[in-house]
Figure 1 (tube, rainbow, N blue to C red):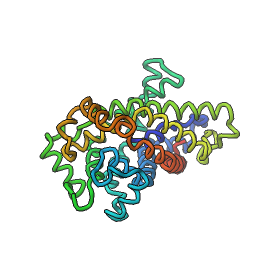
Figure 2 (figure 1 turned 60 degrees about the horizontal axis):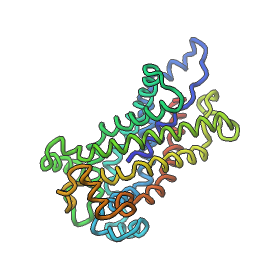
Figure 3 (figure 1 turned 45 degrees about the vertical axis):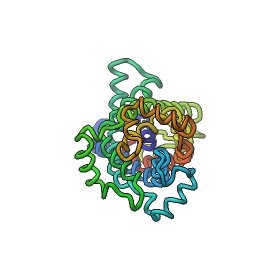
Figure 4 (figure 1 turned 90 degrees about the vertical axis):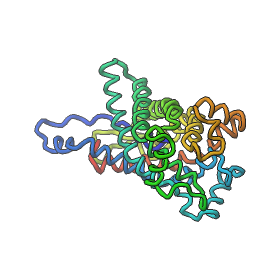
Length: 330
């Protein structure tokens, strides 16, 4: 659910060389640092998610076996959705995604930095392990804060033209609140989400951070370049960033994907005919495995996630690197 934001936050830059005391620019650039980080992560996340929005829509339809598209594969579904719902059908639910991904990326990035410092100073854990722990905690924090928005986004993405239960984002919020248990109705499927996010975000941070630090340590000239806003900071070249992010995302996604499938089905709730058989995480995973098996059930749509990974990481890292330099975050 958070490939772009997790990858963005993993890219913790090396510290800049200290400037002379009294350098006015240094103080000025420290002002509103968190706000600038918020904007950088949010803009990059929105660009990345908009790029892969059609693939996200198809993933939701395939994961939950929508009866209009359950017999189709990834590419045939990408062709069928515009034919049935028009081109904009590929972007259904993307508005709610944008509202969610902006704060999600910001919260995850800031929480990662905070947890990383906390784990290093308070627990004495350093090296690559602190990235794993901080990444897991940051991912779970961001999920808890933005989960209701993801719930609404999934409900809107699952709808098919002519069979709308929800008229828009506000109507979806009101309907879920009124008919599905009030505030708690927005947190259906939270447990499998957290269980999936912990290894996903942790492995993403760990893999990307390790590849980045090893690459810059052993081949700085080949793999790195000076940051345009601070020549003392070495950053990965764009194509190397894309490669590292893609590898990290693919590994993390493979590990956590069954939890993602479970989460989607629980989020859809009463929209699905088998709703009463999927009330808990255990029941849902058991139902999916029993009726669809591993490849066509727990890992249905995984190939689509791999296809999403490359363009998503490309846009996320490229935009984020530009935003970091634009906002003087290096």
